[in-house]
Length: 373
Ligand SMILES: [Zn+2]
Image 1: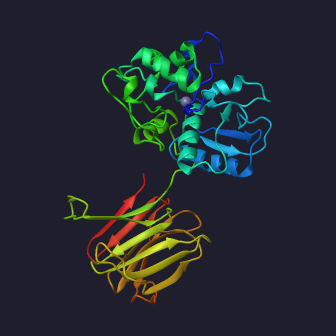
Image 2 (image 1 turned 180 degrees about the vertical axis):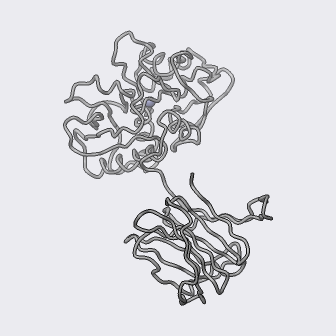
Image 3 (image 1 turned 90 degrees about the vertical axis):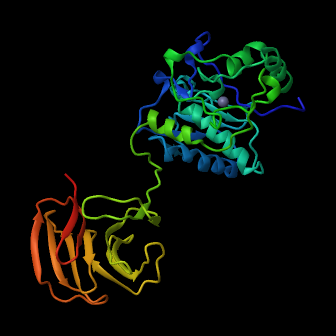
């Protein structure tokens, strides 16, 4: 088959059980439990190819609350081979029905020198099946007007599939009442490329190689909770506030690839803020900020050997801040600060019997702060 096209063929494990397939569009009964760690073991394959597969697979865990733990656990739920024909995966928990020595997923054409785009397309797609997502072109409301004869002829020619296989993999729409699904998504990683010659109205799509916005949302919907690979970033927002009402955001930017910032103060030209480092020490930084762009740091110092500071305010001469003590009580401190050096504490009081205060601002007359219930 010189013109073989590389499409994924979903194995049907339970003979005669048509609805054992899942859709982006997911069949609830085949979903894993949200929060689970699924063990993944390679049965064969070159280390470089295995590594490439692993890196791509973890992308799902930025959106689905499922962790893929790659290793050599003999009881791994997902077992990958590169030696079988084609690329395919068992759907969701159907993987548990496969003999322990046998693969639940196969990548028949991935080689060390396959393009990164091909790894992205095929690995995201097969791991989508492993999470319980079926082919998007079988969406109950896809609206695709298949030219049935052309489709059967096309896959016989390109993949050697008989009519039954093509019906199962392409033509047969999923039943609405056995599936959960979002609106048909032509950008889904779970959709085959569709040449115009296969539809009666000229509809066509190319190969999708990345998770679509809907793929990401759907992964989170079917596997709710904080995804293990969620990227946490801290964003700085600037917007008007008259004491009661917020105006629109005038500036926003990522200030940290983590969640270690603990306090923030800004007088319109100079910003000062607290940030926790990897040793859990808290640093105070002072630097120019014009509402969009930061200037170089003019002062930095360790203010705490822990990460218990929760708020920070500075008007150029007086600093006030919240700090949690070892009993998890929150104290407010006021003391002089000239941008480099602290003077002695002029006021200290207990403001909370817990550690739920998260921000603090004070201009000498009015204070504002955040408190977690
Ligand atoms: Zn597939």
